[in-house]
Length: 218
Image 1 (cartoon, rainbow, N blue to C red):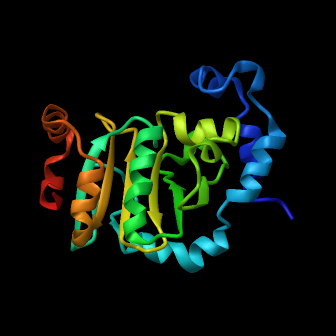
Image 2 (image 1 turned 120 degrees about the horizontal axis):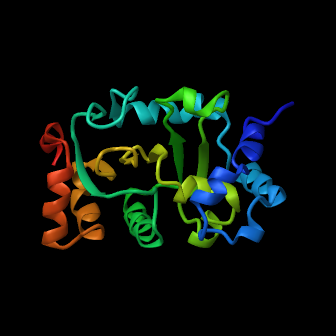
Image 3 (image 1 turned 60 degrees about the vertical axis):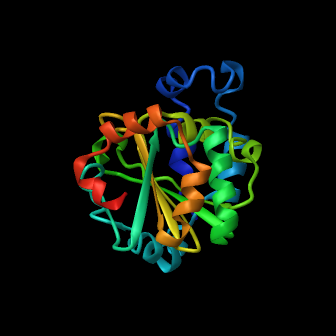
């Protein structure tokens, strides 16, 4: 039986990705297929599990999912917190997210790639990954070129959410001004806002980048 991620192992070893992500992994280490395959064996989210459990959680957080910003929306009762984007996580932003998840009670979180421009990827299917909420930064980044493409490539967009259904994040790396938009139930607003606090200058800049139709979620 062909593994769902079989094509990813070959597709992302190509030179364009190595060139774009130069510096994230030393050139002589890029393309270690054994490390990448072991990583995907451990963290790949099977489509069957996604459809049976995770898709309903995603649909209870995000609306208008067939497009990105500024049309993507959030379910009634959710508040948002936009933060500066560009890539999915820096180590500090991941640490802040994990601090927040201690309050929401998540055991796992998933990362679901959007595929608005299918022609760009040929026959490749979206990345879908599932991680324990307490995974270390070092382990998260341990998949060689697969981790580099997931977490450091500045063009892909993703839905991120946990099994609690109490929060979600949209990674809008392809937007005019890249933003990562956290969404959460109102009772967790103070936790996320405290953990992701930025300077007043940074906040004012982010608000200028935020699409006008998202102000209703603030």
